[in-house]
Length: 160
Image 1 (spheres, helix red, strand yellow):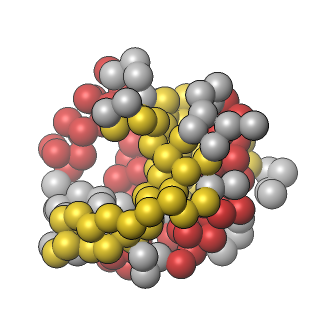
Image 2: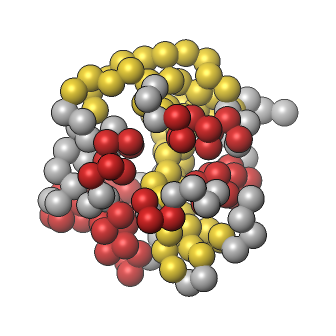
């Protein structure tokens, strides 16, 4: 884990960094289930207004040396809690996704927690496994970030 990463609640001044992170074409392809049009700032802002107004959603900004390096979230999907994360592509490969997700999981009292990863996103699968998630199934869904259906792994982090 990277000792220099910390999480804090999302602030208004984090949103320009989040928007900038989503402009990377490779990151959108890897995430698969990101926005259909990452350049649509109005849709981005509307999404974040909804997310931040929903008390059931836990969002955190990942910060290193006072710089926003990404975000993590836990959100309801039916009766389940799922997690997601997005790290600035310029910071990939440094352990920030794993550290941010692990820190978020320490905040969440509920178990199990679920996650999904596109089957070809080996890096995301590795992050989830490092945080204790295990593959429990497979699914297929339309991914706006790719404009097609994508096969995905369904994962679970069980309670102690």
